[in-house]
Image (cartoon, rainbow, N blue to C red; front, side, top):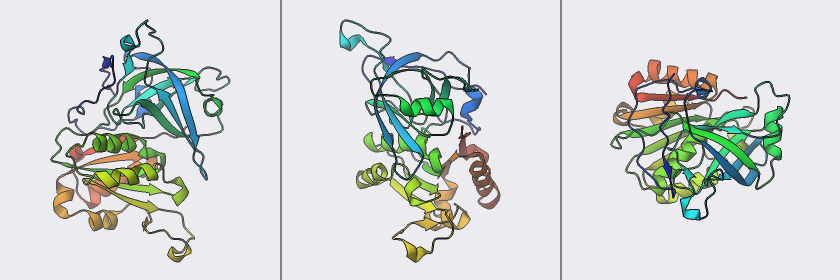
Length: 294
């Protein structure tokens, strides 16, 4: 599948309008491996964070490209990307990994922020072990951005995000960008996780809700064996289904929204069937991106 490989390099990071509305397609990150002629940047690790009770870590990198040193700092270039795109991260010191030293990650930060952030589950692989052990100020090679999983341009149409687990990362980028830039697009996100500990970015989303009146977020947890009275959980329980969507979206809203699905393969298939078979949403109003879970 051909990806959007247009690269914009600026002297200072700026925010820009999102890309043009695209037709329905499954934008699997893995299908773009090795394709295109994207720009290559050398970015510096600024900070890393471990989310307690989970195997998830976040890594924040500089946006400034260290490969193009210049006497005047104003002449250095910065990495620019659209909210929802991804990039390939090449870290040194990876050995004995059958997939090599490069992985692709969605950029979870907003184009309006002054850092490039990724979040991922730390698995028992040489690459993930090396990534988790990187020290601050470490340099990494980044190629990108790539991908068409970006907000539609027609802001009169509501965006409905259906997220599963770590698949929330592109939605963090889109929501933060829409909030900071005060985009006139209404957003409803249904965020499904196995338990409360695995709800990623909740504090940041809660801050966005305070200022973005166009944003609504519905959290649901799927872990079984917990009675509703066993915790102070006030959100939904169970998988995202027709009853849940119709509880929060009117028929008119369902018929005039663009749906974005991101998560593991099983979740993607279930959500696609839900939209097509139960809600009769046409494919041209769906945007799908898969997390392959390495």
